[in-house]
Image 1 (spheres, rainbow, N blue to C red):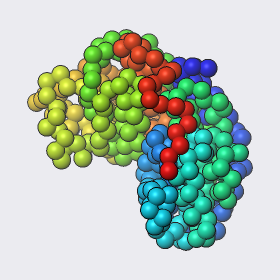
Image 2 (image 1 turned 135 degrees about the vertical axis):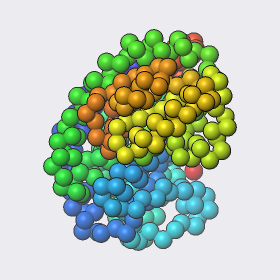
Image 3 (image 1 turned 135 degrees about the horizontal axis):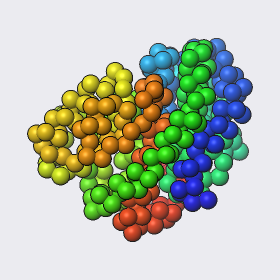
Length: 345
C-alpha cells in the first residue's frame, strides 16, 4: 500500500477505530475522572506532536484541562524531569518505539501519575509502559509520511474528549467523521490540478488558528518531508508579529479556515495579504469569503463544527502534498533522509 492508498484508506481506518475502541476509551475516561489530574503532559514527536497540539486545544476548550507539550530531552538526556504526580501523562506515537517518548511515560508512572499511550502498536514499548492504552487501529502504514496514523490519533483524542464530557452531540459528530473525510477525498481532482500551479514553489507559509493550529503544523511538515518545500506554520496571530514581512507579491500562503470563532480573524488577515502584499493564496475552507479571496480555493463541507474540522481538513492538504511531490518529480514513497520509525533519545 503506497502513500495515496493510505490517504484514501482514512475513512475506513477511522471507522475501525470508532467501532473497536469505544469501550477502552470509556475506561480511559473513567480512570481520568477518578484520578482528577491537575494537568495533562503530552510527549510526542513529528506528526504525533501535531496531534498533541490538537489535544491542547480540544481538551482545554471542551474538558477544561490545561495541556502542556513535553520536552523529552529533560527525561532522556538531562535526567531532570518536572514534577508529574498530579498529571495525566500521555505518550502519542504511531510506532511506540522511540526511547525518549517511552522515558516520559516511564517517569510519569514512577512518580505516580496516570499514564496513557495512544499508538498504532499495542505491543510496543510505549504501550507496555503505560497503564492505559488506546490502539488507533490504523492498520499497517508502509509509506514513510504519516497520514492515517495522524488522523486516527486525532480521532482518538476527540473520542477521549467526548467520553470525558459525556456530550451526545460530540459523539454524534464523531460518527460522521468517516463521511466527512470521504467528502474531503472528492477534492482530489481539484488538488491534482492545483499542484501544477505550485510546482516551482520552494518556500511558503501555512496559516491556521485555534483547533486548526495543529493542521497548519501537520500540513507544513508534509510539505517539507515530501515536496522539500521550506514551509513554516504560524497562527494568524503570531504571523503578524514579524513574519508577515516575508509576504511579498507571489509569495505562497496556504491557509485553513473553518467557520467558527477564528474565521473572522484569519479572513481579515488573508484579505490584507492578498490586497496589499499580493500573496498567492491557497485556502482549504468552508468560509465563503475566504474561498473568494483564494487563487486556489478548496471547499470543505459547509456543516462542520470547528472542533472536529482538523480531521477532514488535513485530507486535501495531504493530497496536495502527494500530488505536488509527484509534479516536482520526487519520490512520494521514499523521502530523502527519512525512515518509517525514527528513534530519538
